[in-house]
Length: 157
Length: 157
Image 1 (cartoon, each protein chain N blue to C red):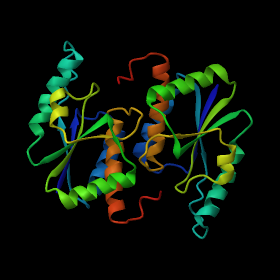
Image 2 (tube, rainbow over the protein chains, first blue to last red):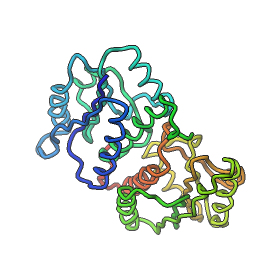
Image 3 (tube, rainbow over the protein chains, first blue to last red):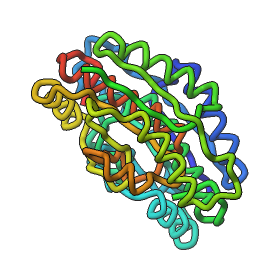
């Protein structure tokens, strides 16, 4: 099983990049993992939020194949504990043959078409994290999930 | 009103430090804010988790004064949305004369004595974040709360 983390827009914060690279490297020991970045559509300032979402949505949809089980990181998604999230990853690995793709959208959320194509919505918190920070938080959770699955001592609680 | 963020143990990750400094600086425009660090007790390897918690708890209690409304960052705490958290900060500023102190404990949680002294427990997520990352996540939320209170455009959702 491959795992992809699909992001909209590059991070411009060097400290986040360092953290993202750290977890990316750690994750590579557990799974075939990669980060893919689609161009940010933020620059089209004349467009409405709806139009921006649709434009970004079209770019996201291009990246999604039949082989993907699509998980949107969405504030209205299901909340898991870290142990429950690890359980989800483990069950997914055991049961479906599909590759996992986790998608972080832009600041205005996902287009209707992207929601329609998705298989699941996941919320990291009831709080809204910056679209930059959510990357680091998610990668840490994915790494934590694998350490839980393997029974490794990273996850203390 | 002063706001203190009380941490157990220094961060050893340079990328997190950079992020923490960034939000610390941003927060200083909105409130009298400071970060205080108590020494980590992790090094006493011969102690049980309970003894470690008690030792750390004693260090935390020393930092808490009568003027403090004590909020523990705890996985069993109340979950707020970012807007609800901003509402809590705003009501607190308007109603009580007490200074706010937010406390992050070590990997084994808080001692009974610290729970007893606390006024509130706050959970950032059902997921468990690393004790290092929780700092950055919390600071971003506190910064976000002030931008929400002021009606500034940082918080999109």
